[in-house]
Image (tube, rainbow, N blue to C red; front, side, top):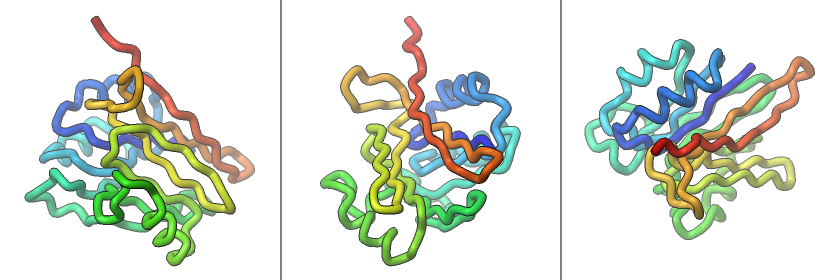
Length: 163
């Protein structure tokens, strides 16, 4: 199973379209918020099931603030992260994930990729595919693959800058 994980597109969907083309075919798309009204558009271009949560800029969205889903044998919590003060660190988010007993917690909001695997919990952020903030400012996303044995693998990917 191949899952494309993105966040913080902020209604600028060109890079998302490129990532879908570059990574296709995918089995699922996960968007971790700040779609800004692009829910239907993203659903239409994905070509696969889509899971989405709302972000701090999704003012009129009917998307849930967070959700838990199963990905193979793994339980995952999806959130934008702003309710857990992720701009200051992931401590509150990690605490909530451990209380819920999830294996993976995915968040957005900070526009920088994170992949931290520690003590049975994976904390990940794909960064922003539209407005990256990490050094080098390359649009980023994560590809999550669950192999035939049911084990998970992650790859932080970067789109090439177009000039």
